Image (tube, rainbow, N blue to C red; front, side, top):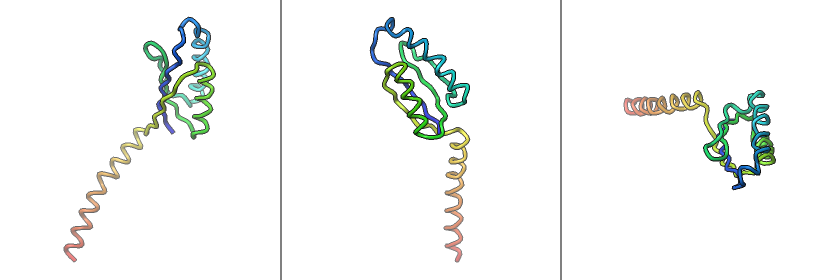
Length: 110
């Protein structure tokens, strides 16, 4: 399951969270090495965005809880659809009207 996670940290003075911010990168690198974090970027100003590929909501919850322990933040989480899955769904959708039209034509001939 793919998710886009956008973090918005609490409005702390940047100088008071330097150590926490520095510890975030090795922590998230561990999830990158495991393949659970596909991409991660720092946001301009503060915060980060990450693409997580997890088996389920329990794993997502665990990662977000750990993340919040490092840098307390609000998380906006957006479920994503893999590109291949989108293309497959579009092919099915495009084929469906043709099948319906074919069935209507057969009924009229009968």
